[in-house]
Image (tube, rainbow, N blue to C red; front, side, top):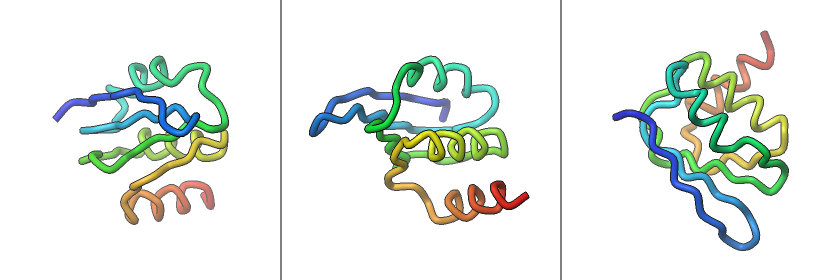
Length: 86
């Protein structure tokens, strides 16, 4: 499944529901979609099926920028933590 992004506003926050792959070939699209968003932005990763190393680095950067990562699979959180340690 390719990347799909759905944008909504909930409780004063911008929520991007991400589905499919968060991989190198889809990052430009995802970056363009969330451009200009800052604190208070939520990335809902419940329906993410696959990430690659570039996707993990991107999600790590989003987390550092103050984006809230919700419904993030434990293996992705662990991978993010490992990337930050290296």
